[in-house]
Length: 140
Image (cartoon, rainbow, N blue to C red; front, side, top):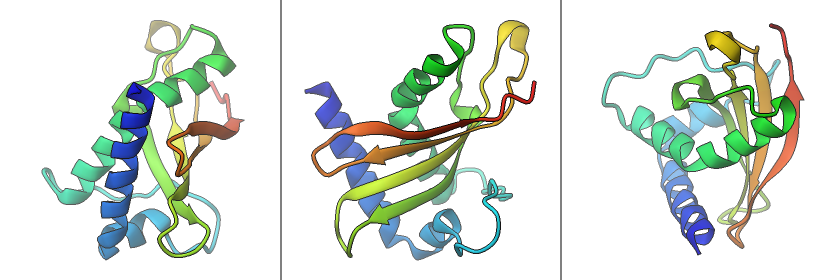
């Protein structure tokens, strides 16, 4: 039940997110060129930062689970080390299936950075959140 409620809240936030054209344009990007982490510094207290932080907070248990499958229990993830690269709506207008591309920078033993990993999560209309892709850079 908790999982469904979390997914429903996330879907509501994503729907709201799609209404904010300037924020959506930043997250989705132009689709050209190599995939990069946005080099954008949001103003303190901005709507963008608030929505970004809410989405990361809701997804954090799934992100941690995905990272621990790769690195075992030797790493930790904090919300400030996760960035949204892209949120993509799958299907036609007003469908409720999303692919969420994230950059994650796990912290290992003694606070050591484990590199930059790319995770793709699928949020589906039936309230399921699942790992689609995990690319581990492991450049530590």
